[in-house]
Image (cartoon, rainbow, N blue to C red):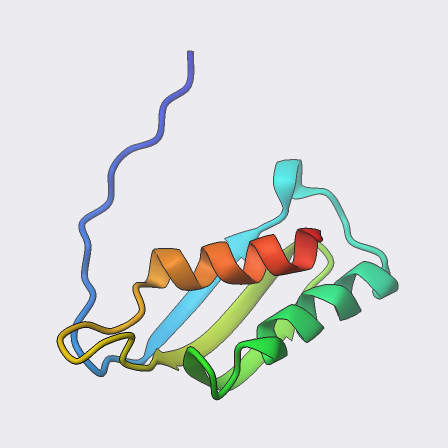
Length: 91
């Protein structure tokens, strides 16, 4: 049985993050699917985060972004931003 190790949460207010995530089972995306992922990352640009760079590779994605404030006292979390991007691209 496989399990995932919990990584420490290293989010800081007003931080800039380099994020990498992979496709399910390292499935290679078609050029059309890669465009969908790029469009999904751009959809939330200037709404939930400032996107400085995005590289969509056949089986993984690199992002450089800075989350915006979600409320007076907190910023969008990295987890919620990735959930938004992945959910938007899957639809």
